[in-house]
Image (cartoon, rainbow, N blue to C red; front, side, top):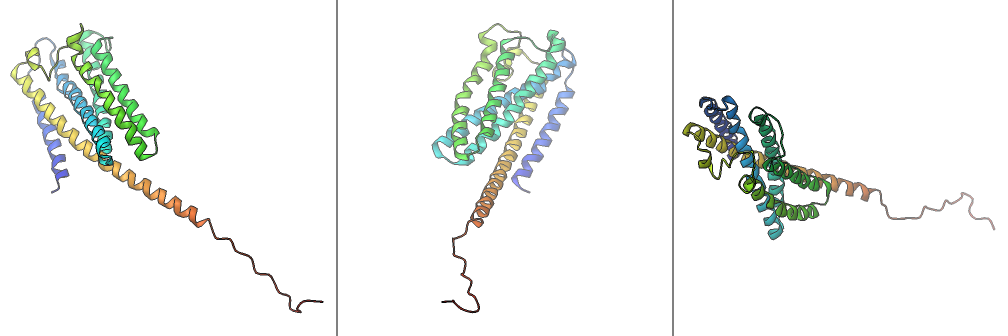
Length: 247
């Protein structure tokens, strides 16, 4: 059995355990079953942070080594990070309706997370807009390094400004005073989402390699066709009459 298959089985297994743990905890005293959104919302934003940090690492490694495998890692991780950020925003909006009474409010954490989402969407758009592989990797690497400054701002916004959003559930879980069953289920979900992240990034990198091979094959075919259309100039033979030349 290959390592990839083992990771995929681990992803399925950990997700199943996390789901069972999330359903097994009793309803929360004030929010009831709505509080179970914690087990999706928190791992999603956690994996978004991880994904964008990996994009930073891949971008820096590409600028140092000029090896395209690091660019593939950065791009694949950013795609998964954008998905996780969108999932975190969506889950947060669903959770906010019964808790705050509205789906959206201009809370610092919410606004900054939305900005984070659109900035990395811009990163992915930049990658799609540049056909040259090397130029794309270089410009995306600079973008990926600069964009990371948003992560600490988003994360500590609940500390630096007055906000409706609760304190951090990952870096400072003690501030939430979660009961042990909730903490165990939350950390199980974080582990499961992390394994899923590894599988998704590996698959996306493999797809990127295949896309590059297809691009190279198409480019080689186009060059061959263009070469076939070019032929060396030559003179047509002069026809000779049967009777010879007349004087």
